[in-house]
Length: 586
Image (tube, rainbow, N blue to C red; front, side, top):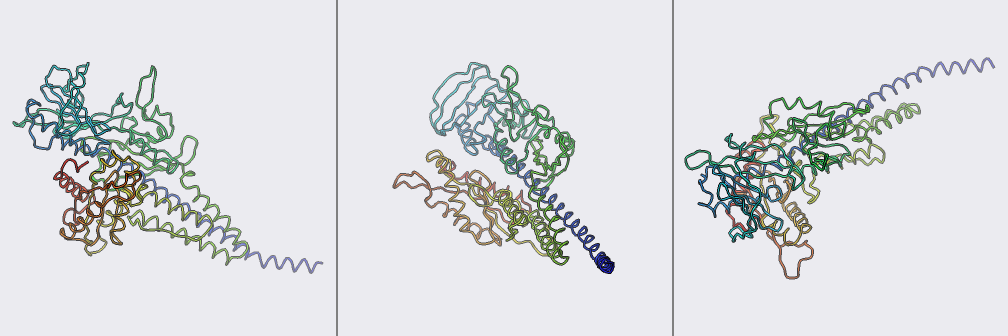
């Protein structure tokens, strides 16, 4: 018996160093895996939230920037205004009609007032007709007329009871004091029961003196929908806020509320009854005091932060200022609790630790191999995330694993799909286009020259007529068919993206000549003009088709940065559209 105990003690003493080695290696490898997993959690969440904040900024800029072109169409730069609006009535009325045709979803009301107190406004209605509001004399009440076409006869409807003098309106007074575009403060339209912003610009007479102001309204309800969509995709919070703490848009609720006695008022960071909104506003409001950003590249000036909410739970957030030359200054914010954002990733880290301890206790070699495989997958996923962040949107990470690592790989693929694919048409979206263009125009790491490419900015013709006659469901089917035609026509390596509405962009790599780009553009116009085949409920024998106006920008001849390329192509597209009959522009 003593000999048996002695032998047993000897074996224990011999195994003790190996057991200690196993414990040490388990702790070291487990700790390294935990740190790697934690870093991946932070890196991936920051990258995704920054992408979403940048997408919100782009949506805001796209929503409000169209108003500049609307004012230009109503009163082109350099056009002198007559002292009496009736002296040049028909051209003025036609320009207002054309201006409301450009972006009827966001700018369906354009108006003009002069120093004599005269005023005219044209409001496009859902059926394509218009309501004309005219004050032809300084002390006259406005008269309302109906108008069916751009050159149709105006029919008297009624006279407004209240006295409307454009000279007393905030948009007139603000624009009269500056020589550039300006925004009014955000205000509540009590007819819409929602927030509205007005863009205005002064107009000069033939002597170069101030004669009047042209303006257009921009409803902001769509921005609330953008915030709602972004927040719901990650089960978080998204909002847009002004320097004074008033909310422009917020997910999960309306941006206005009914107060005492039925009075409608705006929500603020303090009255929204959302502790996270107030906390984020208090931490980010000092950024409003910084100089406005000079560049609006996709991920430029987007910041992230980590903090704890009132319950002590970790929160990840990303925010970015939204500014323009007309005085817009907002902050777009996306925030998600860490546990909600990447719960699968956190569970993966915990699983790796437990699995690592068990495997190392069973066999050191098996444990090392298991940790090695997991670490390789985590590192590969981290590299994929970094490549996507640098603009390589084609990067993917595939895993045949059926555990949490495989779930994370599939989650990554799903998030990449959500970020870079237009949900309606299946082609690339605005975020993907910015990634591609940023990568193609990024400074070269060596002395090699950049690859030339052509950017084709496309706006569909006759799309509004299709929507009005055959319904929005058929409008969606038409957009899907156009997207598929474009994608099947371009070469491998080229890119097709939908900016929104009926606007598409095609990037043709390796093209450096305008005649080659124009030939490709002509083929795309022919392709789009073919009869549509997927519409529903079209009578037998009825042929429905679209057209397209395409503007071209060549890199690097026409511009060397993303925004300038898009602007150049957009201007070329509008110049081409302006040469077409008004009936083809809708």
